[in-house]
Image (cartoon, rainbow, N blue to C red; front, side, top):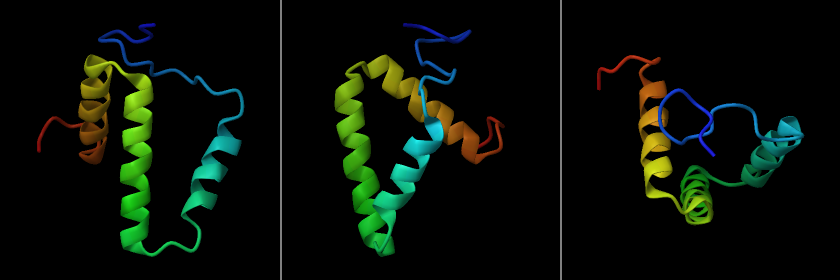
Length: 76
């Protein structure tokens, strides 16, 4: 399952139609206010985390997402 140089988080494209998935995510947020968007995102994250079911992969994804907020730098 590992697909990267480090860890088990798959970092290569794994969707047959990524644009359709992106559009579905955008559409799911349509007509939601900011609070509803945050609640929706939290619920979606928890559902997907449960589906992944691997705490190491989830921790790696959390770290990668946090790192991306800093433009890839390690500073917090």
